[in-house]
Image 1 (cartoon, rainbow, N blue to C red):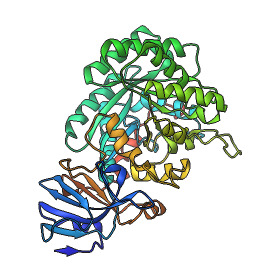
Image 2 (image 1 turned 60 degrees about the horizontal axis):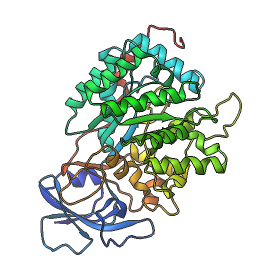
Image 3 (image 1 turned 180 degrees about the vertical axis):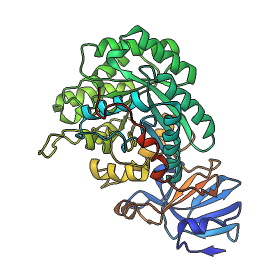
Image 4 (image 1 turned 180 degrees about the horizontal axis):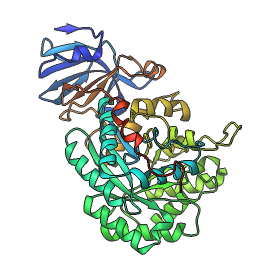
Length: 450
């Protein structure tokens, strides 16, 4: 049966266990190495055969033997592998209604979150918001998420208990990883740091920190590296996010080289690099490439937070030097970061939106080349997952759009899409914000307390 898709989700609903998505457009960078004929946008025309929940075969469009299993003619519609979101904050997400940022600034966000955490972050509260976030991501087609967890103070263990329960409850739908996060100054506190390491090791997490300009930057980084080496932990750090003079990325790369550190290091944000002098940029990026550090940019959150002043249009826009990094072979990614909380008032854990905005903000086009990998193959590889690409034998976790090109995909919001999980249409919708209304009215602390 050959059919033309009028409504992507509707046409996927009654497909049998074995079928072919004929004439799909797929970014060639997300296909196995081979002689794929790609057009101007780097898209290849592919027939995707699916059987028993897995990709059975990939062939250039029209070359597969016919007749065969049920065929859905996509007529050039875009097909992507499930998305991979490598930098989020699910413990603090969706609190905007009860904890808005008073002025949109970084300091305002810090104060609002601290007050809300003290007043409201019970295990039940975090679990409700965490699950709400996962249902948003799931409906949008995300298959894996790494979240940072605030891990300082009396509520630290609470967030990790929620994470452990959610990781088990969502196993097989969304793969979850967690990073324990405390400020770099707190790394120098023996008790706080010991608690962080204990939580990370107990839950199979990664070691993280907010790094910023402080006399404790290098000593704190040395302590992080030493702990990572002792316990075999990967590092995932917030770097140079808010201070134009930040040198955290340079110091991290320098230490990694000096110590011959062999574990993975992911540096998030790295915003200060965009306003450095050319010589410092080159020196830093050379070290980052030599150290094998990966970088994840969070363009939507940083656009929201950075360079705010009353009555003044922002100048510093917060995206790091993705093109220069990629040219040196540095692995680069983009991710959601915060969602409807004081650090970012918007967002929905939709990596189609993130990629669309990143393309506009950071010029990930002309040519599009292999930029689609930044929300799929690249973060999946960094997380050690077999996701983010279309390959024979891989799970048929796919996202189908009515757009026929990257330009069509990026030009119009992509709320309507078909999500396949293990070859079957996902029957899931994003949850209604009203679900959290009662939780948003439980605030007890002063709205902008310390």
